[in-house]
Image (cartoon, rainbow, N blue to C red; front, side, top):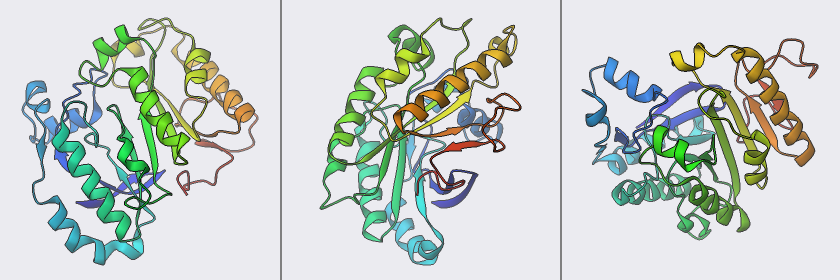
Length: 269
């Protein structure tokens, strides 16, 4: 269950289901990899998540062996811990988080579902857990086209803010951020809507001919990245810029990836 992620901001990760009912059409990198490996047949197969039924038992065996090596566990890179309208996934996620927390292991989550309010119960879950949502647009029309079965955007934000208001750290992944030929939108409006968070990760949209064919793509992402960086500096929000988004000679004094108010490789410290 527990594995080294290879992602700079997440040491160990966990995926307790195969597939995801959200059906994102960016396309989804996780789905592409699972199809390439022969684990998933097609998009329809991906939409029918299969739970790892013995996940808790596996963790009982793995936690004692790996506990000393783990800074925190990231949930999830290849599925969603709070899958919208799939309560059995959320139920298992909560049990996993509780088990990890009781072993003294912090958990960081990211979801396009509704982050459960139960996570604010500090008698059950660790107070230093961090919870995030993917937000790349406030448009429901965009969500219905590219994240067709994920939770409505405003509901994601509201659930995350409710946890933050109760003292938990919250973060936003603004990746993959769309270019104007996909949707014309105000980046500042999105940033204002999530201005309560503690961290923002910003990154471009990859693996799409629609995006790569957009004239001025490089300049668009550079300008957007600088806008996000300036916003986060003004609000005291930690920020992580994914590689390839910031312009060269950006004047920050450090190489990509760029952190503000955060130690490298310790974004969730």
